[in-house]
Image (cartoon, rainbow, N blue to C red; front, top):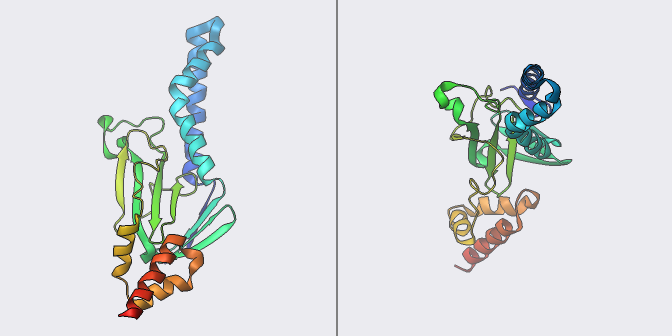
Amino acid sequence: MKTKTYKFPSKEFKKIVMEHLIFLIAVVCFCVFLFEEKVWTGVLLMIILVFGPSLWLFVDYYLENRNTTFIYDFKNITIIKNDKRKDYLYGDIEKSIYHLTHSKKGFYGGEELLFSDFGYWEVEFKNGDRYFLTNFIHDIHKRKKGKNTKIKYRVFPYISRKDTVFPLEKKSLYQKYEEKSNFELQEILDRPHLYKEEALRIAKLLLEEREKI
């Protein structure tokens, strides 16, 4: 499969910006007609009411992915964030969730909201690394979803680390690694740059315990 590189700005980002500019022009024209002398007060009020949610998402997504690039071919995934590169296999994915707005599922009578096109891919790897890849760097609504990817529809798709993160507790991580062979555990220790300190500690502990048997 052809390898694709995703980075800011994506086609979806450009589409969203264009839609908001067109809508902003329409709002200004409406305010000129409605408020007359206090037109700029009206424009400011309309921007806060109408564009407020979108402006929040613009800032949220931009800060998260302005220095992020990922390369993906459904076999290998490379993520470069703040000039730090990490390589993974597709099989290293532990959790994959697409966060989309409810309107994409036909809610609100199927009507599109101004921020309906916002969305992001939450991907977590077996070593505990987690990324939020927004549609500012890839076209989430067009790109084929990977195997076992779930979709979470939300009213407002801001980047949520609290609601969808499942912390790897020591016990659960220990039990998970207990199922791995000695070879797999040694592979983890041989690639320390890809794993967190806790994962390396448990892999080493399990190998030591098995050697004593």
